[in-house]
Every structure is written in structure tokens, then in C-alpha cells.
Length: 463
Image (cartoon, rainbow, N blue to C red; front, side):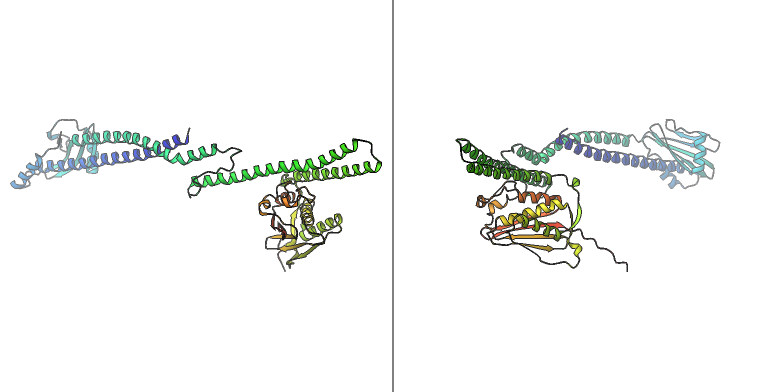
């Protein structure tokens, strides 16, 4: 069932329930009021009958005349009876069965007044004590006029109910169409967006209602998809370039060497060059493998508690073993009073790879004899490593792609590398609920900041 149809039916059902309850309440209380009002009128007739018949010998002629006038103002289809203590009717006027039985006579004597219905008649039985004895007075009538009005009210309510439902269904259908128009518009706009049109965005995202919130959510999702597609395209392009370069060099060197017989030194040079290119391919393959490993489910990675500063020093030692001529200065911006604030939780091998890649990256793009500076900063809930170099820097347009595997800025194409270090470090830190950010200025250098959440346990003092 479509939402529009469901909204229409729900709207009509709620209105129908409210209107039905309202109609029933109006009809019920109108019926109760009519019945009570007519019983009061019959009760007055019973008293008038008693005064006119039984009290005629007790009042003066003027009062008798007044009682007689009141007596002749009959109700429609009136029927009255006066019954003495022996059960005999001493006065009877009007036709109709009043349903008088010994049981009802006894109940009238006990309660004084008894109201009941006999068919369409309403009957009032009244116990009356007079100087001539005790009597039961029965007065009854048919409220034909009010019953006709009540019947007309019933018809009016039924016609009004079904007429109102017809109007509500039409109005609900129009209302639901109006209510669904923004959603239909969103659906229409979403259908126009394909893989080649990810730059398109949904309109009506500036409001504060739920539809605007939905459009904003879609737009944010499209932003992420567009970035992912762009990163994928960049990854494929750069990966193809990085893989093709060493293979092309190897094939070229080997083809030239096989064109004619050469001396042993020339063969040695060609083999040495091919070996270097093969090593580059191995490093590239290892980088791809590490990126794949860094994308694993975090629950499958073994985590331990370790000192962040010790991790940084271990990474520095590894880098210096690989590049003995490099200079790396590590210090503390603020050494904490509690050394537990330097404790983080993670996989030592993976975190070591991330820090080593950041340090090697800084060394690679720093001028000769320039030191890479690393500072350990301890904050309230995290511990950070700030690594700064004085290299070429990264252009603002290239800065947003630094975490895309194989991406390399235009101004560093001449420097050996594969564009894997920072993307790998980012994925490792994400696995550890950490973060990495890059700030760079052309010809001023680059600063990379690594942050990890602290595992700081306060041990209570029971002394």
C-alpha cells in the first residue's frame, strides 16, 4: 500500500472514530434527556390526577376549578388509573396496557415512585396516601413528538456521518498528495543521480522540517559517495602509474640488453637495475598488503596497553637504522606528572608501522641536513605526536588527497615513493580510534599530527 493511500485511510479512520463517538454521545444524551423530561411530565400528571380526583372533597371550589383546568391539559395518548388498597381501579381513563402487576404494586408501595416502560409507553406509578385511604396512581403517555424528533436526529447523524466521511476521504486524498509532494520531489531528484552525476544534490535542504533533514542526510551521503568515487578513481590511476613505471623500466632495460651480446659489466648493470626495480615492486606489494591488513575488523586485532613515548622512540630507532644520516629530534611539550597518562591501548606492531611511516615521510621530503622535529603532547583525554619538516610543502588542492593510496602531489613527483605511507597510517589509527591530520604550506613545510585516546586509570587511595 502506498504511503499516500495509507495516510488517507489513517486520516479518515481517525476522523470517523471521532465523528462516530461524537454522534453516539449526542444521540445517547439526547435520548436520556428526552426520557427523563417526559417522566417528569407524567409524574406531574399523576399528581394533578390525584388532586383532581382524590382531593376534591378537601379543597374549596376555586382550587377545584384550578385542578380541573390542569387535569384537562392532557398528554398525547394519555392513560391513567387510580387503584385502591384492594387492587380495584376506582378511576380509569384512556386506553392501553399499563403493565400493572401485583409485583409492581408492591414495589410502588415500597419505593413510593416507580418509573418503567411498557412498549412505547412510559409509565409512572405513584403511591398516594389520602384521608380516604391509600391509593396507587398510574399515569402513562407516549412521547410521540419527541420520539419523531429523536428518529430525525438519528437519520441526520447517519447522513451527516456518511456525508462527512465522503468529504474527509476526498480532502484526505488531496491533503496526502500535498503532504507527499516533497517526498515525491526527493524521489524524482534521487532517480536522476547516477554514478556519473554524483555532483548533483537534492534541493529543499535548507529548511528545518523532516523532509529538509532527509534531503540533508541524502546530500551528506552523496558527499561521501562522491569523495569515495573520486578516491577510487585517483587510486586506480595512481596505482596503475606506480606499477607501470618499474615494470616499464625493467622491460626496457632487459630488451636493450638482449638486442646484442654485451660485456659482463653491462649485464651486471642491467641486472642490478632490474633488481632495484623488482625491490620497488616488492615494497609496493608489501604496502598494498599492509593497507589490506589495516582494513581488518578491529575485533580481530590483538590489543595491549603500551607507553606512547616508548613507541615513538622505538619508531625513531627503526628509522635511523634504515637511514643513518637522518636527523630526528624528539622531545616532550609537557611531560605529565602521572606517567599513566602516556599509556594507550593498541597493537604495537601496527602502531609502530604508522609512526615509522610518518617519520620516514617527513625525512623524505626534508632538505638535506634538516632535522625532523617530533613533539609528544599530553592532553586531558589523548596523547599526540606532532611531526614537522621543512620540506616543499603540499598545495591546498593536493592536501585533501593525501590519504588516498598512491596519490602523490605534483611538486614531489621527482622524489622516490609510492604514496602509501600516510594512507596506511590513517587506516591503522582509525582501527585504534585515533586520528591523523596534515597541515602544510608551500615552501614552509608540513606538520603531521597523530593522536590516540589515553588509557588512564585512577587507582583509588585507601590509606
